[in-house]
Image 1 (cartoon, rainbow, N blue to C red):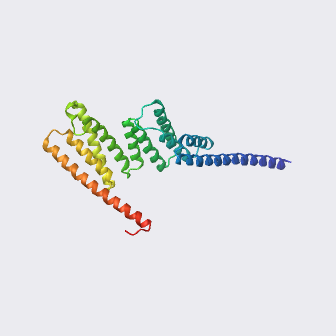
Image 2: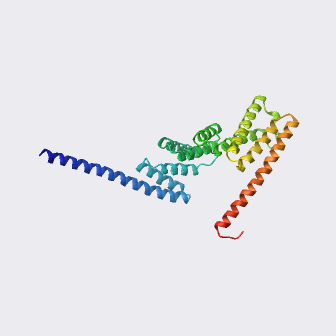
Image 3: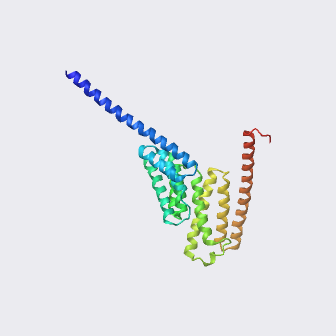
Length: 265
């Protein structure tokens, strides 16, 4: 009698476990279906529909990281950089919240790097440059051999400097000394991180081009004519070097496309 009762209890427990497991598997399958529908809508640029599908996917399977990533990307796709309307900023905040949720749910470095790159881009588009640079720095910690976040910091610093110095440096003379020093520090940081980026990738043409631009900012902020000319000469060298490198890379890419397409060069 005892053995039969014990057997019945074990059987009931097994049925319950299997039922629970089956329900979980069913929810996971439903989540995958919503994810696939969302990807199709996202590819077609139907972002509102895509967001709805991705939201259903994460509701049905909270562990489906791809759904969170796509949801955040779809939310970001509706955000217009530099736009200041309440609706536009809410889109940015929604995307930020979803990307941050990914960081809470995974330790995968590829996912983390993707999230950090997107967060830096969103904050930059919102004009919140310090937060953008903080996310670039966090990405450097995750990917110390990747030159892209270094480049990202430099592009922000160049833009901040250029906006204040003017196209030819015409605004420098009206800047207060303290502000001029702050801008100079941004330029120096930009130069430093780009040099590190080029150490990691000596053929990073975009980094080379921005280093040229930052050298020109350095020239604008310099009062000594001889030093100003030195910075401008270095900038000119880099500009030509970057241009030559771009041409070589484009020629190599075109030759590769022809080979893959079976064309004769």
